[in-house]
Length: 211
Image (cartoon, rainbow, N blue to C red):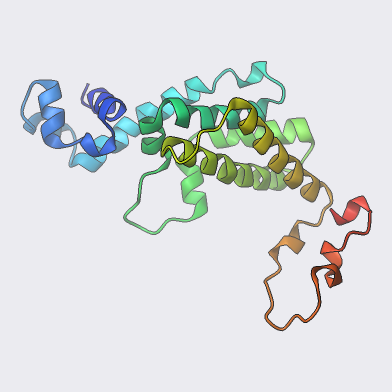
């Protein structure tokens, strides 16, 4: 009940509105019962986030009825930011006190990561490693669109979201299918005196393997 009430406050008023006082008032009690169940408000927020994550998974749960299924999930992620901005902020935009790796962030997404990676493996005939790479890159892109939507930086139509996600996905897929993903790790050089056309993997040779 405490966690569900906390989530309702976040939905209606935003993450910053969740305090021990506001939660106690919504529960019709003092703050004491809250700290009998939880050590602090961070734990309350985490409990509310677990409920929110289950709600998001249910929100995106019809992906198997669509083709391509993985794109459906990406579009729903951005749509969620548009329609439930405070929930999106709770799930994906919370600052952490400790340093975190990208893998830590992926773990926060729960079972959705495995679902997406398995869909990519199945539908695009990629290896598990390449499917994971493609998922991570597309998650970053969809996340960016979601943040811009949740923060009202930009309004995207459904057609715009579909087009942008599709273009980026196609580019990453071609790169992975070419077997040359390692060339993307090149560092810019101050000493390079030529032009872009002098770099072998960026030169337009008209051959698919150079994509």
